[in-house]
Image (cartoon, rainbow over all chains, first blue to last red):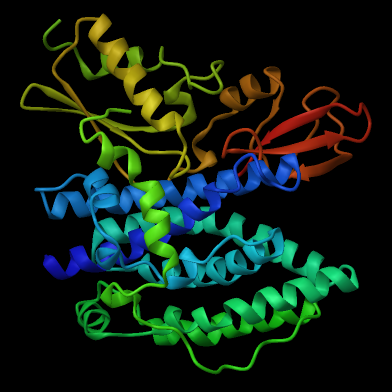
Length: 248
Length: 150
């Protein structure tokens, strides 16, 4: 059960941290509609994370879902590093979102046939939501890339900057292999082909070029992060840590 | 009432309005999946519409209040994820209520709830709640919300 717990936390943390990042757009969106869109996507991801953390709390009954979210330190978070990267400008956020949405779509499609009923059910539900998110981020990427010279230049830079974080989507470590052998987990390596197909097509429609693969960041499966995560957690966890009995 | 019947519970649940769209009940919305009686305790299975919908917590509290007010105390609410909620669970009369309330119901093709025009324009796929998208009617020019098919 400890293995399933760890595996569940990885998926939960990825949604949770991306949700927290997106929530920073609330009230700061470039237009009212986009403000609402980004907040809605954030909410969906928080909801998915909540479902997964509730499941984690069922496995480890000494903790609640809130304990998992608010009382773990940086080294005990297992979200993909791409999720903790800063929002930057709207184009930066949309590029990050598109790369993640494409991954989520493919990952949840596989996870939905997991032997673990809880993970399969949450995956099945998440697919419906991610389909909306992907359509939204894809359309924006094409609009910005195939927009003006300036917007094209900006999203190209966004993509170049974040590319080194895409390697983590397809990593397989010991736990991934174990979960795959038990028909619970996903073979991340096999997601790459379809991810490449979708990404290449959209980048071509957006008239931006795919960066060359070079050094890829790694480490989140072992709790290693960029320096940005600690700062995020300091803000996200402040209230329940400062006022441990606070209710909301 | 220490026991009541499963039918009574369904009737009471049908009095609980959706927190965001009060013209339909949580039963009509399709979020109540099952009511069972196990060891003299009613197990009420609810499912979220969208994973992050803030109304989920509210309607659980509302169900609690409705049952307690009617002196039913032997119940437990459990959240289930499978099968995932779908707008297909809304019947024609529920959809008619939505339309009357000014929300274009979840049909494949959105239609202006005011003038029935099909000449409409998508403003944003994301609306004031997770389940709705924003549209504008090109004939009567009224903006309206469309309940997304999911």
